Amino acid sequence: MDPLGSLQRIIRRAPLVSVIRLHGTIGAGGRLGGGLNDHALAPVIERAFRRGAPAAVALSVNSPGGSPVQSALISARIRRLAEETGIPVFAFCEDVAASGGYWLASAADEIWADASSIIGSIGVISAGFGLHEAIGRLGIERRLHVAGEDKALLDPFRPERARDVARLERILKGIHAEFIAHVRARRGARLSGGDLFTGEIWLGAEAVDNGLIDGIGHLVPKMRERYGARVRFAVVEPRRPLLRRLGMAGAGLGAGFGAGLADSLEERALWARYGL
Image 1: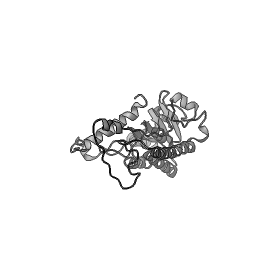
Image 2: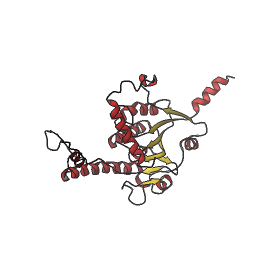
Image 3: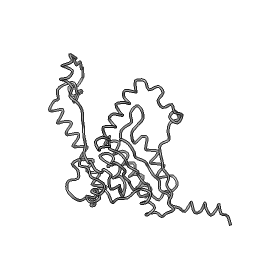
Image 4: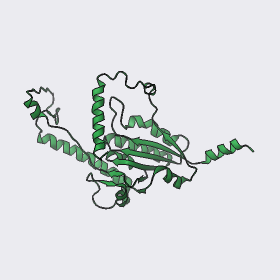
């Protein structure tokens, strides 16, 4: 009898679930390389579906949202690979799956969450400041030269123009329509209740009732329930750059520090929207 061979055969037969962690804000990536984006996640998603013949792919989602374009690109990539491989996808929401975070979760065939998870926020937001009066009081003269009368759209240092606002509202409504179409396509007849697309948020237990998620459940116990107690988990993550692995990620930031600080503040504001 070969105990080692028997153990290897048992391990090979145990179902594998690939886990992709979608944690953080969604964006093209600032100077410090933060945020979830399609470019960084493309090889991760590919490995999750292709490596080790997984029985399923589980998305661990904890995101307050961010870029609608990156949300759409990441979700579309997940769906393409799911359809090519025939592998089912399950999303497990943690603290927040809101706005773009919910866009990512709805790429899954089933969505599960904690009873206290924050779910939804199916809407689009644009925020800024109007500083033209402030700089006037400080005696600051704004000098702006453009070719093209609409190049300085919604410049915060000049009074807001009605036509600029109308143009922005048209863009926001178009993005909102894409978000709604994605959710309706993915959730279909499971959606119920009133208007789910106002930007409202719900706790996980409420989101079950309106069809935004399929039930209350956590990743490991739910996957064991579905695939058996011997199911294996493989977390697939981006490969870290060499300098970062050596602890040198902060070297040479220079002028990028200010941009990195701005990225950090914007990320903090996104989380703060949900009290986190």
